[in-house]
Image (cartoon, rainbow over all chains, first blue to last red; front, side, top):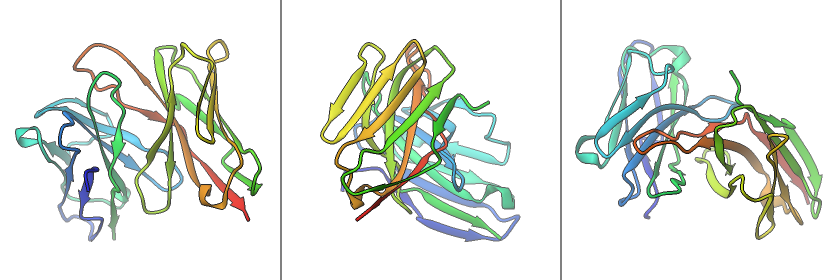
Length: 113
Length: 116
């Protein structure tokens, strides 16, 4: 499978715990995005990497969120001290080239109890 | 601030019908308008996209119509099938200098049901 992959697909955690998600983009894609999608809404931009550099962060990305993309390959998104409001689908997308068409992974659904 | 407004929220059509989903945007810097299809439990999948230098684009049974002056665009699904039942999202993006995120701004989605 050469698409974007995300792990885990589902995560249930208790409030206050830390969680980490992983995204493996399409291999030749140098741009990587994280989005958050809540029920009944479209995805909302969280952060963007070009190669290993994190170039933009949304104001939605509070201090409890951190993302990395070491070596410009896979990326991780960590949420510290989770809150019930963090419950959502976390989507990763990657793209490459002039037209920057973004291809999404299947997402990680987070439930905070 | 919702920069891309999508309607209707839900839509039910009979097999063979032509559902139409509409979007309107505010930011005149947007210059790329994709549509995504999402099935339950899956990530959004790119269906078709248009740039504002054309007024219509067709790919298979999917057509985008674009009205730059009205800042509106719509998705038409010809000969709809039960397998088209999904949530459809319009989106928009600016194209600016190299290094910028060029992130997508999504509408709120339309849940389409095609009855057999």
